[in-house]
Length: 153
Image (cartoon, rainbow, N blue to C red):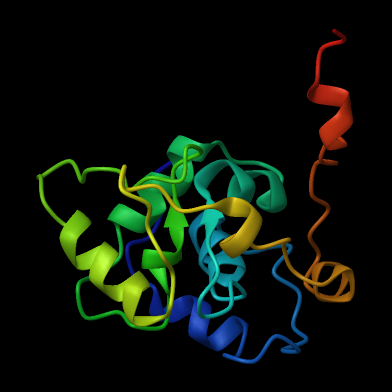
């Protein structure tokens, strides 16, 4: 199923503030992804996989496709705040874009280490408020507790 490339739809569904109250349950995948990304605060970052898990019916790759579908003039979705799982910037399919993304994040106060990584412990986003999720019809996949991922010994 091909998603709409018109991001103006999301503006009518959720206002710019985190307490916009209209449910997104029956909208397309891309508007739901954009609505989640709009919740990432200035100076914070999220991963493609994190956004996908919150959306509940997407993969990290689908989130990337949704961001690639944004028009260059669409400033309603802070695309620059979504990084890959290693905390680095992902090259765009047409090449380039990473320097623009890095400049935008640095302007928000996000710092990169010498290897071009962002520290999730410092700049990572914990996700939207649970009340926001419920009001907008999201039922994200549960996130495993960090200790559950560690192997003994």
